[in-house]
Length: 422
Image 1: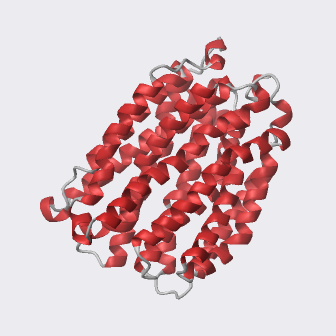
Image 2: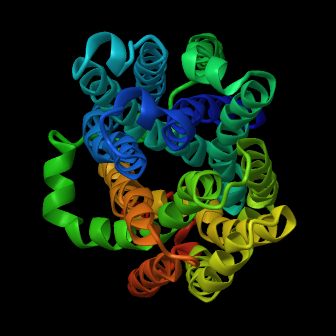
């Protein structure tokens, strides 16, 4: 289990590195380079628009790779998704800017971002299911949390590289070539991830199944549509909070508050490190007390904290901003630490790779794709962007209602990962 969990964590970290490095670049530099004819605000909105395309692609990746995972196994998904995301990320670092090839530059950026999202949409389902379906029932939450640490590691790695380049290069050097280096580094990371995953064995639950779904998506839509919508709505707040902190707040702090890139990245990265460190601890609580109570608690805490977080961010003081970010991400991890065990337990094994991944990534469209765009537009011209706090609070209340309608799976974990399989 340790070897399997470590390989899943490493692969997930690498794929989320690819995804997050684009978000940081969008907040810092892509607007002026690829949308120079726009105003600064419009350029940032356009860059975040290409960022959001990755989230739109993620449910499509869930369908594509979910079909492979439910028909042919979880392991092939891990290899194919990592290869696709890594290749697309390296290619982003090679795209010429608008000044060189004109409108073809943002178009290429859009296509490559779409391919990134497609690959990441398959990654989560494959990594989480392979771990969850190997794990003993009483520790499924703990072992399944390892892939959930991957996004934190990927984010810290992506932003650590950006921070080092930002601190070591002049603004002109960073804009000319420095921002491309983290994208090129994705090729080395992808190769390492493929090597790590080459020794993984297939999920025992998949091998035990006597009959596989012929068209998994059709079964999910027909039999589990309500479950997909509720899980997507429940997860929306986690995405919204995470990308409000890691993407929108970065751009807002640099452009509106005049805080340096280095200080903003350091504050956000420190909060993400705390979040990642707490993930397995919260997952253990999920194994003991249940998945649903923690999800409800995380949504409630988020709803209560969004206005204080925005007030602390608006001060521009590093320690106060860090406090606002870290409490928000602790509320986030209270939900997402147990999701890797919770979602597979909600779906029967024959459609689990498709159903769990589609629900997870639809939540990303609702919460992650729109939040930087909406928050940037709402915050424009406001001294303190209370509208952003109201928006995030509203999403938290929506997610709270969705989780309230979902069942608890803890009593059913004895025999199989999914209640329907019992």
